[in-house]
Length: 178
Image (cartoon, rainbow, N blue to C red; front, side, top):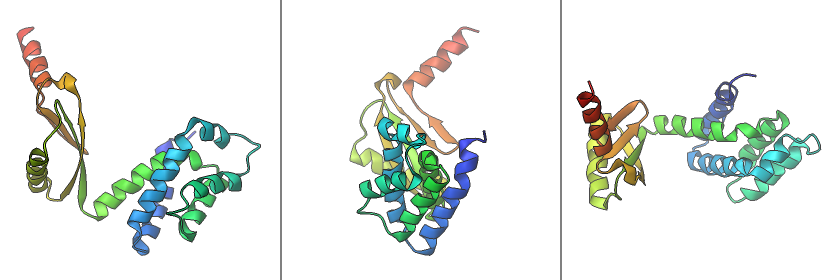
């Protein structure tokens, strides 16, 4: 079976192009995120592979849950995915769509894992520095991991800065053991 990403890519691209052409990035982000969450629910996941459940019933279920954000285009998109038995790819489609949207809007999604919660001032300074370094607007996604001991790890695509105390101690231990 082909890789999920390979199958999901044309659907994500189609969703992105429709959203761009109709200036509806936010609507599509909301619908894809909601639909992705729905299909990841274990009860719904079982229905995706059931031969007893019709494709239109599956797309209807998702459309009912995401009804506030749905329009004709997003309903048709979900119906197409359901007819092709591809609703299970929604998490991959949503992820690829968001990457395409971020690229089009010149935004870098940056994952920041720190040993302690960052203050608003720290987030602003970090975002400003990253904006200058990456030459694009930055959207920070912060989380805390106390096992880092101190510092932080910053990831934006292939760009990684590991300024954690844990990484420094690991490097020091590796140097001492040689």
